[in-house]
Length: 77
Image (cartoon, one colour):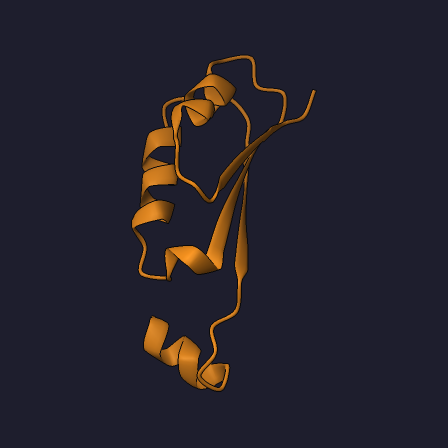
C-alpha cells in the first residue's frame, strides 16, 4: 500500500485523518482501533478520530482505554 501511495503523491505521503463514527459499538471497538493501529501506513502520518455518537453502552469508555498517541476520542452528546 505505501509504495503505490508514494508514487501517486510524487514520493511524499500525505497526513491522513481517519474518522470513525461509532454508536453502540462496544463489542467492535477493540478490533476497529487495533486494525487501524496495525495497518501499514506510517503511524506518524495519520490520526484516528473515534467519535462516539451518543452511545448508551460502554463505547466511549472502551475507546478512552486505548492509549495510542495518535488517537483522539470525542463524544457527541
